[in-house]
Amino acid sequence: MEKHKELVEIMLPEGILNIFEFRGMAKTPHSYKVTLEEKNRSPKLPREYSTRKVKSKGFKDITINDFPVRGRKVLLRIRRRVWQIEGLKKLFKNDLSLTFQGTKLEKEFTAFLKAIN
Image (cartoon, rainbow, N blue to C red; front, side, top):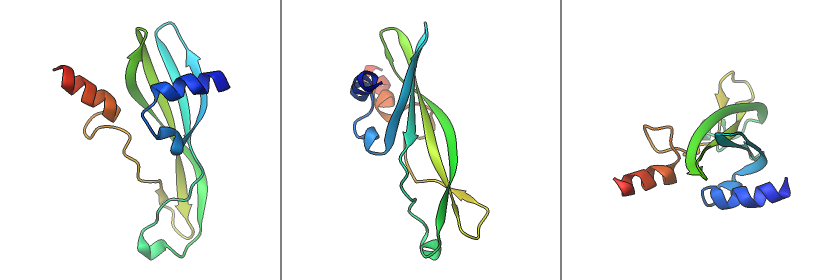
């Protein structure tokens, strides 16, 4: 898996492994599926909740289409950590902007598509 991690790191947007941990890669005839899991870092809370305890409540998965590689789609499965603030039912997650606004495409891929147009 360490070999895959080094290869995937080259393919991923710069700095993403500061936020996420590489959890694996699967190769199919038509795609590469890369799984990343958000590191266990407490979220930045609104000021009114800053003194309350937070507890990790699992993950919410999203999939992002990234640059194709060697004729195969690259799908990034992002496992976003969700948190619950003590005394509230609402779940929170860290504020991360992984996709270009209004699309399901990764920001660098969107910039690439704009450049070739």
